[in-house]
Length: 280
Image 1: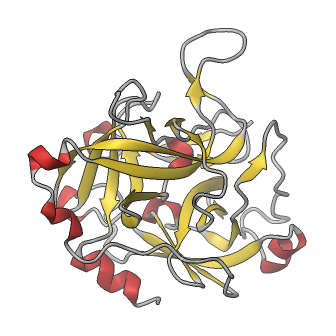
Image 2 (image 1 turned 30 degrees about the horizontal axis):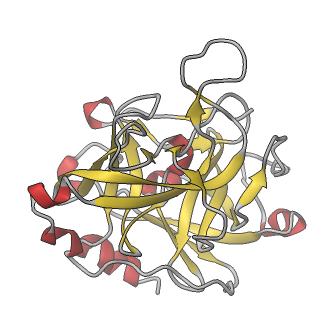
Image 3 (image 1 turned 60 degrees about the vertical axis):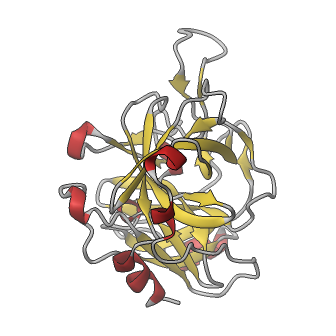
């Protein structure tokens, strides 16, 4: 099974990353399998000093993936990248552990699994969720070799500023990520629970709720008839799109069952775009 990697930030939010070692994990709530709708969205797998984790990332150039800073901060060794839409339907976890977890993955270990390798970088002004005005939950993974997949476009600077509150509250955004649903188990307690499998790329839509200079918040409720669901633990770093443009990356959520408000780090702001563009 897959255990959840969580941490508390401002307003007691829960970070949306998930490990791949032991315990439950979660991702898109509601929605549907993505198939090949977003082939440039991949799963990333990495080690830090506390264990092995997974997040979601989006290819924005032949060698650069965009993700969240909390998915790159403190990474040791190389990052494994997998663009397969279906990782496993029923388990077990297909990824071999690193020979030396303290050192993380080597490029050779990742190559032996038939996957891509890259290096993690974290925004220099990432505040580790301590400063709402200086959030900067953005990271990149630079691949060792370019990949032949069409990149996704990033929204131009200040793109989201066009959405006044009344327009934002009626606007649907698309989100994509890896992990499993939060739903009723086939047996046992019937309370919606983060489940470990299937581990696949999923997509859904969310409705805009609030915009700040750093954050886009959205309502992540699968019972909202205007949208399809929301994001959860395994979706960290994954994209939120408007009209096919990446406007943010999945950053946090307010509840452990992922059925309330989700937060997305804006990537259309100057401080993020200048830093990201330095890798392109």
